[in-house]
Amino acid sequence: MDDAHTSFMTEGPANIIIRDGAPEDTDQVIGLIGRCFAAYPGCVLDLPGLDADLPRICDTFARQNGRFWVAERAGTVLGCIGYVPCGQDVVELKRLYVDASSRRSGLATALLNRVLHAAQSVHATRIDLWSDTRFVEAHAFYHKHGFVMPGEMRDLHDPSNTTEYLFQKRL
Image (cartoon, one colour):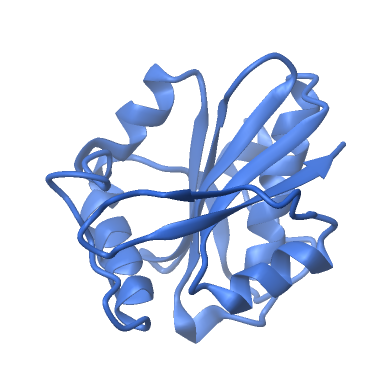
C-alpha cells in the first residue's frame, strides 16, 4: 500500500490518518470548508458557482490529473488538501483547510508535505496557490514554508467578493 493510504504524520497530532479523499468524505469536506469560511465576515460557500467542484471534489481532482487527500481521526475529517497540474512543471495547491480544533498541531504542515512530495514525484519545479486576502493566518503559514508573493492578485467576482493573492514556491 502506498503512502496515500497510510498515516503520513512526521509531525503533528497522533491518530490522524492522511489518505486519498473518497466520495463518502464529500459532506464532511463541504462542512469543513464552510466552517473555515464562516470565520471570515462575508465569506460564504458558493456551491452553484465558485465552489461547484465540492459536491464531486474527488472526481474533479481526478479529471484534472491531480490528487485530493483528507486528514481524518476516527472517521471525522479534520483537514484536506489537493493539487492539480497547471502548466509545464507547475502544480497548483488547492483546498488546504484545517478545522479550527486542529490548527497549530502540525496537521497543515503534514498536509502540505503530502503535496510537496507529490509535486516532486511529478517533476514539478514550482507550486502555485491562490489565497483569499482575508486569510492572514494562512498567509503566515505559507511564508513560513517558503512561499513568496510575486505581487499578483485576482478578483473572483463571487458572492464573497473575493480577492486573492498568488503565492509561489520553487522546488
